[in-house]
Structures are given as C-alpha cells and as structure tokens.
Length: 156
Image (cartoon, rainbow, N blue to C red; front, side, top):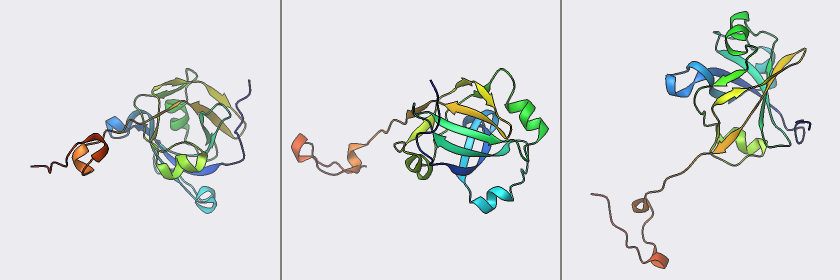
C-alpha cells in the first residue's frame, strides 16, 4: 500500500531534533516551525539538531516529514537517521497552525517509537503516527452548568 500524500498540501518547516521532555536533548522532534520558500532556500543549520523538512499528511493519516539532505550536516545524519530508524523518545505537541493546515485536528502530538526511514536522492522520509492530546477541563473555569444542575463555585 502506498503512503503518498493525500493532496499536494505541503509546507516548508524548520525542525529542531530532540526530545521536548529533555530540553531538546536526546532523540525525536522537539519543535516545528513553518518557514517561507525564501527561508527554505537560505536555510543554514545553526547546529546538528536543526534541519529543514517538507511536511504533509499521508492517505493513511500519518504525518510525513521529508528531511532535506541539502545542507544537512554529516553529524546530524549519523546521529538522528541511523539504519535502525528515526527514534522519538517523547511526544511533541505540534502547533495547531501546522496540523490544521495539513488536515489534522488540533492538539495532535507525535507518538514515541522508532520509525522506518525511506531514502530519496534529495532527502529522508519519515512517516510518524500521531495521537490526539487529551484536554482536561476544570468546571470552575466555565461558570454555571444549568443542564447538569452544577452551580458556579469560584476558586478560593
């Protein structure tokens, strides 16, 4: 079964590799930021954790990162893209500004694990599973709930 993007919605992004739970140390996706085509063309990594990627959504609903080899440092490729796969130590909550544009719901995060790599002439493709972030609500933040007969109780 092919996992081509659903439609040609793709975005350029600057990606910081690492674990969000370890202040971007270790492995995974620490942060993702959309960049313009001009920023893409002029991109130069400041360190081994900074890469650029094209983001899209596959037909199967996976988040597809195509990490560009152009400008990727050798130590980045060795450390983060070994033959064993792309490792994600902890979930990264992706910005709604990205996920909604790609056709995902808001509050999407990556799922920790080791993901297979597909090597292209121009890049390395990784297709990540995602999960919906759970939202916990505090009823004190919403006022009265007449249908539930729950009065508003101000926080003390």
